[in-house]
Image 1 (cartoon, one colour):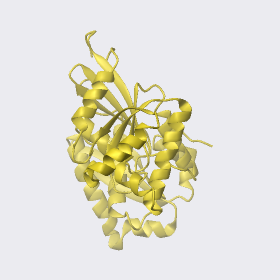
Image 2 (cartoon, one colour):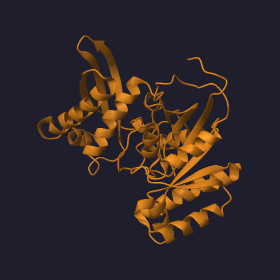
Image 3 (tube, one colour):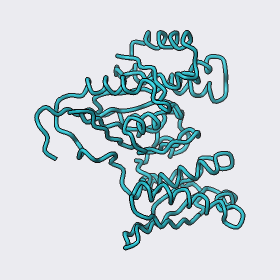
Image 4 (cartoon, one colour):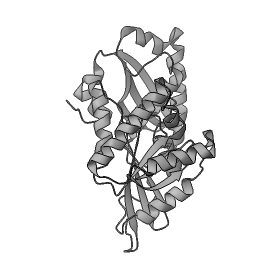
Length: 312
């Protein structure tokens, strides 16, 4: 599209520990669902770009995977994708789950791990000499004195140019944060058309929608040994026909995904179909298959299919 010399554009890398609220923040900033959101950590696997327009400024948000201590090849690829998201970014926004970070001072388990992951990111930013904007998230779950004390302690690290207190889920503080990002946007042409909300491909977006429904349905039973790939995509007179495969690591997990008489898989397909129909604006005819593929998380081809670069 043609733009005037008055336009501005900022690429914004959004980083943080798993489940800090990065995807919720990006979705809220864009005003549409461009990244999947569940209560499970590490659900964002590849870098997803969400695009928002504010006046003469285009804000391109890169929703990165959560940064944590990696074990599998998939984990290493996810963490590498997160750090790579900072390359070429005009602004870095670090999201911290404020209640979990504070609780991690004295608690072990999930809160302790969340704080350790956040501290690992802080150390990485310090080593790189990279400045960032801090978004303290979930402030509605903390009283003000604790929140102010946490903000002061993090400000003393010297990493942050500005600190914003937000609730990505409820929308608190987002207008002020977006205004600051618009202010930081350098002059230049827009990178995407005005009406584009994301750069994720339709095939990958469809796989992500189904993966979200898989996590939401089986958040207790199924660990992270699953992925979804779109095998076929055909536009028809009646809508779009989509063929997908859900890969699991063990035979027992296949039965969990299928459920009794295939009812669990049918429910996942129904929920994904409804979302895809709304997103695409045409009927989505979704056909799901389940296959066992041991070690898929260490296969370079599987990682490429979900938008990640393999890391040895």
